[in-house]
Length: 452
Ligand code: PFF
Image 1: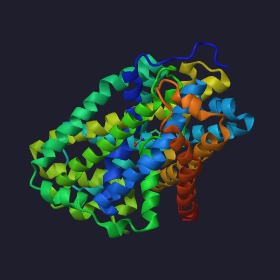
Image 2: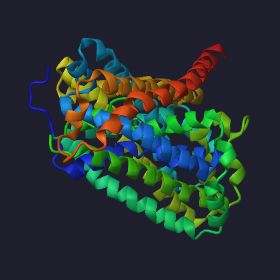
Image 3: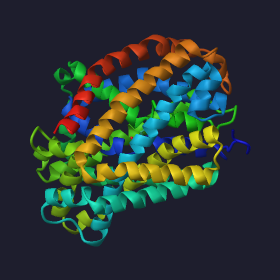
Image 4: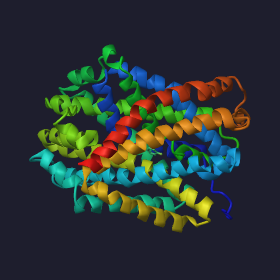
């Protein structure tokens, strides 16, 4: 049991920036624009916004409610409101944080490596060979460890002194950089065709159920939902926080940055006629995964831009590093807070021991990109979607009077009936549907890894 008084954010802005920092990460920068382009441009965007509003936001509010109400880490929060039987759902959250950070830190390591290249040597030569060099092997392990070290150092600094302070400094910087890059990109010759590719609505492309699966998976990953990250951050909030407003701001900022990232990525790619490489089709870039494509196509674009490419590339990868770091600290914090609450460990010990374990678990992903890909699929399809399903059922059906808790700090009960209905019916229905599609694919991917 925790014996020290629970840590608190020092200000509302601190909490909001930290939560936005958790949401905005590698997911926004690349996965979002890739999916949007592949699945119908503006039509996908509309679907994505719909899923975020109808499914993502209610779950976000549910997490904030559980965290703020219980003032506990995920396992304890669920036990607090639902009894011992719900503890295992919290354990799934912690496991998800564990798995996601293990490979997320490997990808983040690549961004550090690329930023250093941009700064000191520029990008040249064969970008595919370069990517293979960076992404696999002892170098990848080294940068993964270095990134994990930065993450644990911040988390060990505590909620106020580490996490909040980092978010307050880095998040405004990230916004400025993304806006600046979008403005710069708008003046490139590829802006017109890039925007057209990104934003032209192809409503036929969203008429497949698979697309809903992608939209939902992306929404949960991007909003950091389904594994207790928002729950954990909200557990350091006071009673007066206005949870619905905070949810809207966090989700709005997350969608906004994702949208802006697309406005940066596509003009850059189209300025150089590299559009063919953006969507990996079977047998080409797709073999190295969506994540890989970002690290192959864009350095190619930066290399062709000459001197300007050096600093644009540096800034671009700096944005990725900042996004990844503020997300990684939230992933680690889920595990750390659970260890502190559940095992009675102090913060320093919890942070260093769990980070060491995650760094170790990430090693196979740094040696084999397929392992990384499968870890990503398992974590986002099974853990996050399954976790979100459990959460919506818990708050929708099991928790006593969540409305009383969520309305604290607000001045009315107008929308909360709708919130509860969404959590009871709409969110579980969508998630069950999506899981039915996602589970077989994911299990097949796992089997493929072990089968050859
Ligand atoms: N939301 C982060 C991103 O978009 O990169 C990833 C993430 C962070 C997922 C924290 C889940 C989480 F709990």
